[in-house]
Image (cartoon, rainbow over all chains, first blue to last red; front, side, top):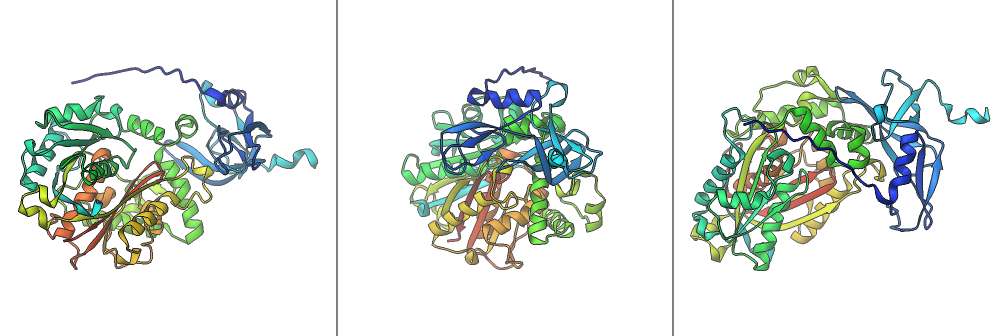
Length: 130
Length: 374
């Protein structure tokens, strides 16, 4: 017996809408806890550290350092630390052939979702002050 | 009291990729009827059914508890479905245990089933498994289960010095254990080189480091001694059952390489049982990946016990992983070991206490049970 269902979801994202809208622009918008100051990226509705519910939006510059990376048939992904964030993030790598340990947030390809990182040939995080 | 509840009987179907045209309803019915026979009971003796099935996407059946009650001749029983990702089966056992311990039911059937292999293409199952984590971040970024485990285990390697050869030894040993298990999906005679030569799935994990997608079902009957035929008095009983969650996103954990939720669940279980890790004499642990077995043993406090019989069933790597059935089969294997009637590889020394460990996500939702021989 064969059976097929095509599902087309529309998913409201509630109070995290600014975070997802920023990702669509290629911007990193974190959330900072007003209680303990922890900066979460991806953004959260409630602080995972102190359970504080008072959160404010906190833009990041979008650069990150690779902690661990994995490559396989399903793509290349990494656990990274975004500059200015207290949490780590799991990201997809858009230019997997690059072997750098540094990268910058970019828009998801083809209008997709999620956090994507473009690896850079050097640590561009301090370019502004050099 | 939890300690009054015994595993009165149980059964499982073979775990494999079905190619014989049989359906998940067939497997569920076969496991259920064999479990009843093993317990010396009939369908009319059961007053509650707890079904474990991870996803309606796999079965194409919403409300599966009602359907399977109907299929198994359990019309009129109380029925519910329990879901907790990879831990669904074990959490269903805990739900059934709570029903008996509380007096809500006298004899409960816990029935786990999943057509993880035969209904969908592997790539589609992989995409669905990606939603087992934070679907809005990890899932929609396209990160698959193997990649997340690969990121976590790299931290484990850096912190502990564990090597790829350590992982391969587990991949080989669990498949060797599975060769004595007639229900196992991957009873393989493989070498460390075979593991190292298998294709990369998500570095450092290779195909033979990964558990398979399996079809199958498992069922157990839970009850108090006094509500069973005399054979119930020889069955293994629960000493503890606990569960704990960790932060869903790997990146938000204090140490992404440490299974802190599993550690918490184990500590709660040891406290409930009045035991320590040193008292455990056999363990069935959640080895969705070879390195994950080492991460699990660390979190359970069993890493310093090289003599401990672990995953004699073959584990997920060898016995297979039809998700809803996995935890039920783990509990069944441990119980049968304690009763000295396990159908696969047996512990050399009859154990008194056995630990069962299962999780969903990446050790996100963790279930631990400790069983005791009579």
